[in-house]
Image (cartoon, rainbow, N blue to C red; front, side, top):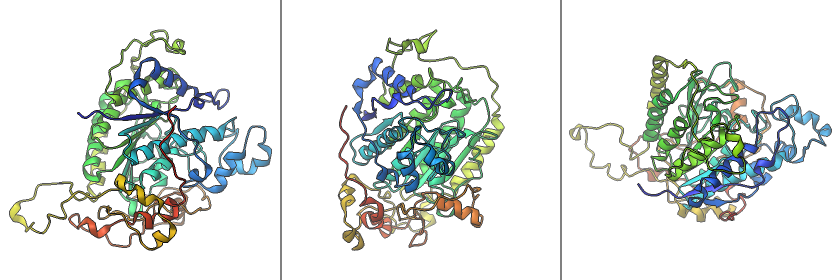
Length: 511
């Protein structure tokens, strides 16, 4: 197996922020994880970078301008002038998203690291990028939610879409990745997959029947689970579903959110996964050899989060580390056993084999409706069944944005208007227009459209609220054997509204 190049993004200030007394989110866990990575010696095999601070302009590629401006200005000492906006944006004492010292800087660090990881992957400078401070999957376009204010995942995916025709997002946090799903609910260029606890549990979304809408129908995959999910059960559903998705969707890049609240013993969780069970998901996704952005997420038992993210760092590096923890500045947190791996509890697994098989079969049916990309063999065909002499050119794998497309990123508006195009192509059936980053007014909360039902006013509000990619395709869906050259993507032309506005970034400065 070819050795993977792994980049690691960390800012020394990220562990110093404090949400407030009694709040379950503890950024301090990031400092503990970093020190454990240092003390185990894993850092020697990592390319370590200090991320840039994401600018408000970068954040407004997805988020509403007024919302970002509010976050950048509000402080605990200046809340009074912002009381109305705090209600509008779901921020403040009566919510799970308080105003705390350094709120905006923390978002800048987390988002900057995820964007930097995506940039390195785009330019082929690394195979795997790690940002344990990222994975804040609940943040909406104009609303904070679930301890999340700025959705670094969406920002990173938008960056990846500059070079990759298709991006796969996988979420193994115990909570549904609602913010990311909502952002890409109406596009087929991003497939979102979430394995989560469902039923009277935050955020209350992620039903198996929520499969996307319009061009995005069948590109939102949800596997709802019950309490007590253990290693064997999780593996029995994760690997078949992800394997089928990789076969049919063939993404150019993968974003994996590794929320640690699905571990046994989490303060807010109710699953029963061990470190090995959680890390097996990382190992399986890594086995496909697709460029990979690995992010953190939830995790509220302080001593467990650094354990699992350190272990998963070792898995990504292909390096074994000892079970006995080495001494470090926060050694006392890991008592009384001072070991890496922890025993799981004896809680009952409420996920029966029959239930898991039923949901898995239902999702396979959804995935069967996903149009496979050219070059992905779905089933054998008898040679005599049809004349295949003219299909040689069409059987070539679909083109995705190569690192040579970097030159297009600097295209001017005039070049874009002239129709400057990339030599790469989008697979037939996929929307050819990247994200429209025009500012939209925040919409009220709306129920999610299911399947292909006609859009109601509420559904239109939902679509407006999402930063979905432009799904208006200029050409009808072609058959799987159509030549990909007929669907060439104007990388600079179609994306001019947001590609040319992006500030130029070089590779991050090493810390």
